[in-house]
Each structure stands twice: as structure tokens, then as C-alpha cells.
Length: 467
Image (cartoon, rainbow, N blue to C red; front, top):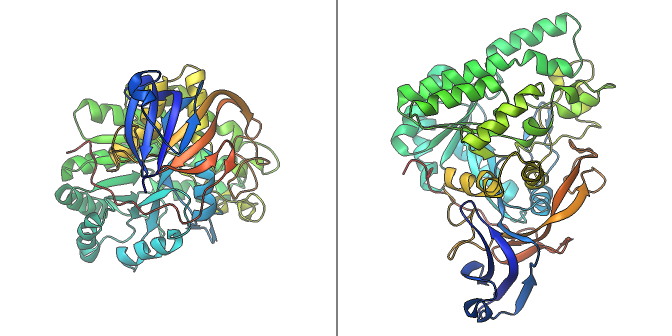
């Protein structure tokens, strides 16, 4: 039996178009669009009709950087795949790409199998995986080829966290050379972790233990230096590069220069770098610990350069790097020693709303909002046009978005499994009303109607900017 839904009367906004159109959904996919009020649209019939008059009809968000249940610093990220994907849906995101972790001494396969076991049967929305490569050796390099065949087509390396995830330049070069051959995309955490560890040790020896020193030791110049080094290693390898969570204007400059040279280099930033700053890290009574993440928050003057980068396409994607730790019992592990504060912020529920606020504030256009939050991450990671757009044949991952509703972000009302909000008290205009995942209602007029296990693992093709 064919199941049909029609969404009527909304403004359909994609990365390329805005049109008042009705959308016909059949069996979980978009079957047709027709201009509202035309005979073609009026001919659409369905068991379920959704009135989107006065609302936007947008593609579900694609958050290409989340860490559900990530082990870090002796604890675990507080969102499970069940709670985290439910919160994502509340925020208008219908696909996440999470990071499976290879531990040193173990295979990529063991790490990937562990993450499949965490996610399977628990997700409210569709999910895919990147692979964190912590141990580059001949076997790992061979495994990269096999994972690409399974639809895990991107591999993250770290220039930070010596002793945990860190890869040296030789290991990075070998992985990049492999990705140049097999079509994979290397994602880089670009910070000079060896130098940062020296600065951490020196700060603690001086008695500088408060959260704000986390930002002071992880210097913008060490992000820029690592970004430059990653770009040149990728250039030597003839490989593309995607730099994650760019926070510093000096790092944006390195990306812009590389792109001007015609290199296949891409950059991502996150809402925390666009809306928060070192002022938050300096909040008294250890409150600053709530804002400890890496790369760290920067002084406010960096924000303008990040917004500019998003407008000029020197930065292409906004993801969350959602990695929540509760203030009570988790962030508190670092009282008296900022280096022991688990690194990460909650945000998977807030991204689409914060970026809509950026539209309201004039930082970006409506279409650019959809481009950086839906279409480009889908293209970057081989999910387009199944995800990231509203077009015939695409999955019916659709959000009915009320651009006029006002809300106040708060831990009291959010759905992430964490005891604080990084945006507590922030007023925003625009709110998710209804969310469909493959045509099934996950949020229905501000009620959760989804199901753990509806979300399916989604294999990806290789980066579509390189085909």
C-alpha cells in the first residue's frame, strides 16, 4: 500500500531555490513538487496533509560532526544514540554523521563494529559514520579501502591529544597518500598538540588552573600552524583535506590561501565559535568549564572573520561537534586543573535555530543557511541528493519551520541529555514545528512522535566535490 503525504502552502527553501510549492511524498521519498495553487498541485492526493502556510519547508539538517557516547578523559559523552538523535530531530536535524573510534592497538573494523552496536536499533533519525584513525600502520591503510566499500568514506586524524588520538606527520602523510588513491577524505583536528602540552604544563606550574586558561594555552597561532601543516601535507600527498571545527581567524586565512591556490581544501566551523567566546570561558565559580572544547572558544573579534568565511565560501559547513558532558560530575573532574575538564559542548539541538538567527541578524541569506547546514555537508560526505535537498527522488527528510516563533534556549526545555545549555537564556526567532524522516513524522507540531530504531545506517559515497 502506497503511503502518501502532501505538505501544502509553505515556502520551500533549498540551497538553490525558494518557491511557494506543495510537496508530494510517497513511500518515504519526495515524489513531486508543484507551485502552490496550480492545477498540478491541486491534483496531489494523500492520506495525510500538512498545512505549512506561513512556514518554511526545508530539508532536514545534516550534522556531519557528532560524538554520541564518546569515551573521553575517563568518562563518556552524556548523550546516547537514542537521546542524541531524538534531540537532533527536535532541532530540525534528520541525519548525523558520528565518529567511530579506532583505539591504538586495535583495528578500524573493531572500532566500527563497536559504533554500529551502539547505534543500531536506537536512533530516531538516519546516521552514518566517519572513522577516527588513531593507529596508522600497513593493516590500517588496507582497512581504509575496505571501509570505503562499506560506505564509511572519511577518516579523521588528530594533530592534538598526544598519547590518545595523536598522529605524527609521517602517519598523517601515509593516510593522506592512501586517501589520494582510494577516494577517501581526510578530516583533520588541526592543533599543534605537542606544543600545547608544553604550554599546559607551564600554566599549571604557575598555578593557572581555571577553565579560562584552557583557551589561553591552545593558542590561535598553534591552530593556524597545524592547519598550514595539514594543508601542505595534503598537497604533497595529492589528497583533499577537510579541516574540522575551525575557530581562529588565522586558521581561516590559511584555508583561504590554499583555496585561492586551487587546492581541494575545505573548512568547517561550529555554532559555538560563531556565538560564544573566551568571555564564556572566563565565567566565575568554575562556570567557564561548561564552555571547554577543542579547538577552544576565541576572543569575540574572531567571530566576524568566521561569518565572512561562511559568506565567501572559505568555510563551507557548520556542524556542531556535539560532545556533551554534564557540569555536575563530569566537567567537575577538572576542578583545580583545567586540563582534566572533559572537552566538548552540547549543541546538536541548537544548530539549525542558531543559524536561522544568523539569517535574521543579516549574517547569511536563507539559502546559505540551508547550504551550510544541509546541502553542503550532504555533498561533502557523499549523501546528496538522497539527503540535503527537497527534490523528486530525495528522501523525505523535511522540516516545517516557523520563522516567526520566538524561543529562549534553556536546559529546562532542551532534549539533550545534559544538565546545562551552552546558550542558556539566548532568545532566538524561528523554531522547528514538524519533522519528517523518510516521510515518517518524528516531531509533529512540537510533539515527539518518533521511534528509536526508525533511524537507519546510511552508507555514503565519496566526497562529491571531487568527482
